[in-house]
Amino acid sequence: MRKPLLLLLAITLLLGACSRVGLAYRNLDWLIPWKLGDYVALTSEQSAWLKPQLQEHLAWHCSVELPRYLDWLQRSQQALSSRDSELMASQLADFEQAMQRIAVEITPSTIELLRGLSPRQVDQLLAAMDEQNAKLREEFLEPPVQEQVSRRAERMEERLQPWFGTLNAEQRERVQSWAQGLGEQNQVWLENRMAWQQALREALEVRRGDDFAARMTALLQQRERFYTSAYRISYQKNRQAMAEMIVDLVAQADSKQMERADKRLQSLHADLAAQQCTADQAVARR
View 1 (cartoon, rainbow, N blue to C red):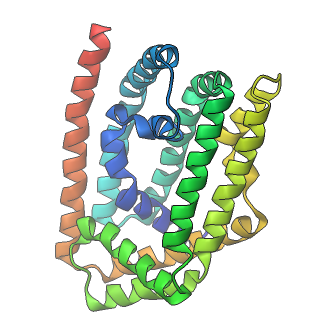
View 2 (spheres, helix red, strand yellow; view 1 turned 30 degrees about the vertical axis):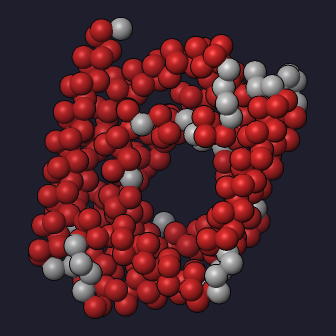
């Protein structure tokens, strides 16, 4: 892979993923593939079963994963401060491995919970997904393409702001160019999302069957298997476009912006270290 792509991917994690890492052990929405409670009314028996499962996942995450994140943030800070593209590139693989470990950790509980859903609960889940997709379609597809592009640029600037502060004119122009280049990516993204959901629907229809566990394991741990052809083609292209943009943004950043990004990483590290202490105490009380 080209170095600019690797540099972008690593920096993208710094821009978007670190804040999730800082809340991971206490944020159940991040440990569970979807907010099931927002879609399905669980019975008292299901809730009683789920609670200790989640506690076990959180205890595992606190004791096993959070120490890894502390080290990851420290190395990320060093890479960003020195603009070391090689080191920043290596951070991507570490983070992706962490995401995969979490997917593996929660798969058995997710399978068991979904297997026990009643027909009415499955209907609730599917209806809620349809409603959410309609809202996403209204927000991301109904506006004219040029408006989609403008909103895309605005969202990216919002994600960059906590790290770099107000972007300079050259950086804003670069973000706009990136957003324009993605064109009708919103449609490709939503169609891919719905393709994954269709596979989930089909799996839920046979949730009492012998192959349900295998189906759900693939859905949770091998999402790339369910990419649409359009999304598969655009995925690498879009990652490359993002890479080139982030590399340019870092090159265009002044010393004040780089200092701001470095301080944000320091803050995340301190916050995560404090949460680690709390997590250890919680595990010790179990």
